[in-house]
Image (cartoon, rainbow, N blue to C red; front, side, top):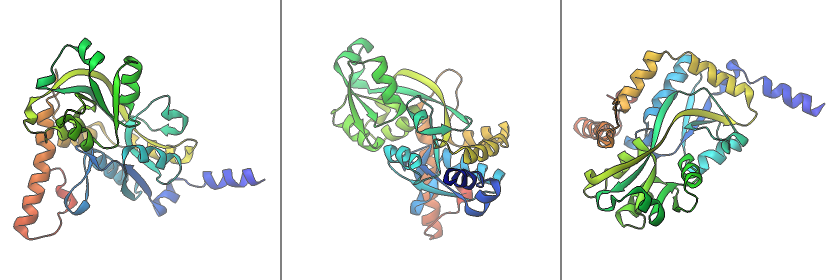
Length: 279
C-alpha cells in the first residue's frame, strides 16, 4: 500500500506541478562558455541560455545552482538538484541518472603547450595528463590508454595552474571549456590541440527512475525549434567546418564578459540585465 501511495505521488508531478514549483538546474561554475558566473554572480553561458529557452517553452521556472563537477553528479542522483544542466551520457552514469534527448554536440580534445608538442606515442607513455574528476573524458582516456598517468582535478582552473607549472604536461576535456580557460596561461596562444579524442552529444539528466520529470524535460526540448537551437549556439560558439579554433572560442566568451563589465562601469550600475547575456 505504501509503495502504491509513493508511486501515485511521484506520478502526480506532471507539467502543472512543475509550473507551480519550478526546477533546480545545476552546472559547474567555471566552465565558460557552457556555464559560468558573470557580473555579481549572474548565471551565464550556453547551458544557461538553453535552459532559459526550455523554461520559456514549458512555462516552468528554472532556478540555477552551481557546484563542482563531481558534486553536480551526486547532487542530482541524491535529489539535491532536480536536473543536471548538460553532460555526456555514459554506461556508468546511466546507473544513477536518466538522460533527456540531446541538444548539442561537443568535441573533447587533448591539449598541450607548444613546448610539449611531442609524438602521441611519447605523450601517452611519458606525460601526465590532467582531467576533470569523474568527467566522461577521464573514463574515455583511461580505457583507451590504461597505462597513462592521469591527474584528477575538481576544477578546470586548477588544471590550468598545473599545466602552467608543468605539474602536468597535457590536459584532456571538453574542447570549448579547456580552450577558454587555458587562454589565461602566459603565452596562452601557444596551446595546441594535439588530438581530438571524440565527438559526443550533451544531454540534461535527472535522477534514475524520475520518469515524470524526464518526460517534462523531453517535452520542453522537443518544442525548441532547430533555428532556436542554432541561434543560441551561435551566441557562444564559433562553428567551423574543418576544425575548431579554441582561441576564437575564448574570444567569443571573453568579449561577452569584458563588454558586460565595461557597461556596468560606465553606467555606474552594480549589475547588468540578463537580456544582454550573449550580445
